[in-house]
Image 1 (tube, rainbow, N blue to C red):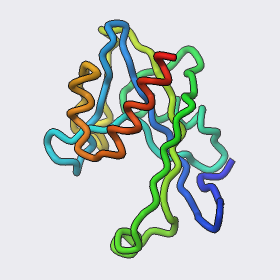
Image 2: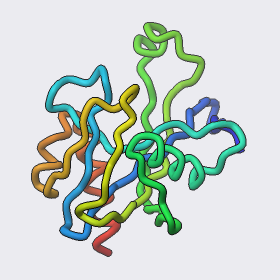
Image 3: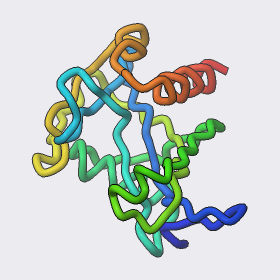
Length: 154
């Protein structure tokens, strides 16, 4: 599998994002280095060439959180596509037009030990659903989180 999708004339970087939930109904969000204090996202990252999105999600959770997943995680029927502005693409000298993220739910025990990837992750914290919604300053991220909540409740 390729790290990129080619669709409708667009070149999209394939990514994965995980809605990490514990057995107390709390959600784990991460703050990567370079993000402002109080700005949180779902754990995950890019798909590498030769990887499926399932393999990439397992690898990213192991790398970022230090958690080895023993069971297959459920892929959520949630779309998460982001197309870059031409200004952003030029400023970052990107060779692709946007991102398409496959969304998963990862279930952990509330006391599961985490070992954060120091090179990438500045902080991680458990949030209630209401707190998590307030922790996403970007509307698109809130919308995706809400769609994930609806998908796991269905």
